[in-house]
Length: 608
Image (cartoon, rainbow, N blue to C red; front, side):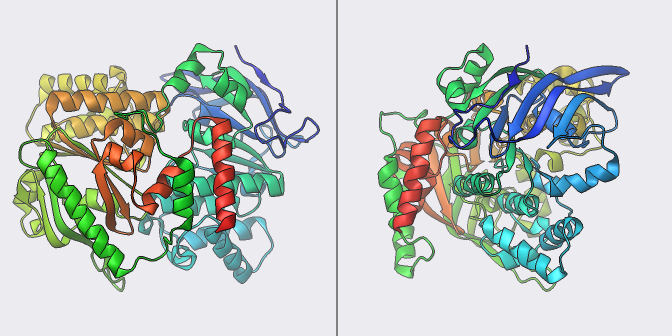
């Protein structure tokens, strides 16, 4: 059954009224894809409308039709698609518009923030050139005016160095920085309608809070309508006025944010909310973070500079934490051990070498999960890449599965041997899978190259791995572009598990997954770890996921580990102001509590 989404005066912000003009009106929208000479429905008879200044959140599992139905509004679906129904933007029919009119509308009247910035941004143009192109295409302005506006937008989305980001290519930015650059491009023309497809997927919690504030301000200042597509219920609670829950192409429940969160009616909505991870879920005690104290401490602390004495104090704290972990931790030889490690990105042409990590000390034992958290650009992914030999160690000692790989660049055989014991799940599933290989071949390739299995034995191993990550076996013949973002990430996890690694390096492995699949993947990680006993370096910005999964947590800031300890020590009793600020920025899957936290954060920022 599909519901009509009529505007709700009791919206979460209280700012949207029934008198606000309708910006987007969708009636009987259906989307089908031609697969194997038959039409497969992706969205069925959708009806909703979004008024000026209103945020409609469309939530549901991967493959439920959220993104497909929204991309259909602007004709952004592939040629094997069929779209029927009516879509009107401020009274203008979009489905009947020709390509030239649609090109004018895209970017100027309607902007889209895509889920995966690396595939949405052009890799051969700088970030600044792409924003300037968007501005000059839809507005009459000089190159200097466009550059000034682009720098303003990059500053608005809190990129640490707008001038540097303006001149950078997408691959020179971290995942979170790329997402912010794409948001800056999307917002540059002040659109009437913003379609945000997982806008905070790659962002750490502090920047996520800033981006949500930015989108809220855009809605309030420009009276823009926003369609928010996401699986993050904390983001929904923070921003949405109304919610539409989709399952298998249908809208199964609609209502205001308060109605959906406090009294969900449909069993699927209830299951979706029950699967949302939240801080405190993994606690061994009843201790919880004192958000007020954490916010006050973080606001008053000076986080922009750290003096040498402070660095020395932190180094001593880390050494003491490591000594305590080794005394009380799991027995056996460490699977990953970092001692005073510094990691550099090598010099390339005129670009000098850049030291991304300094003085890192970290130990992971068999069967242990260590969560590595921090903001974008803090060095989390850098440590993960160095652990598999993708980046050189500039100083210190790094041991992986008992072997010193600090100088492994000079010893290819040693590195090849070590990598057979390491599995890696990458942050961006689209760019990590070969688009020319069916997913069955992508999963089986590591086993075939390592000589672990071939023929029928290999096929059975592939089927078993697909079962473990909850994908149908007949998906083995599909190509990556035929899968949703969450499904592609599950393929990446299956591939990483294929050689039964002793060390798993997971770089944001659940960032692209909806909450119900995320819960299954986390349970899968725990079950496989009990069965295989592998160690895991879990790189993430989602502190709620770390709370569920990690035994120990390391907090990184600007290339240094500033605090580490057991899960409960870090999440329930953080000592560093930076850690407190991270915890205070985590969105809560409760509109009322999230509004209170946001207001408190704004008050403290005003005091500062």
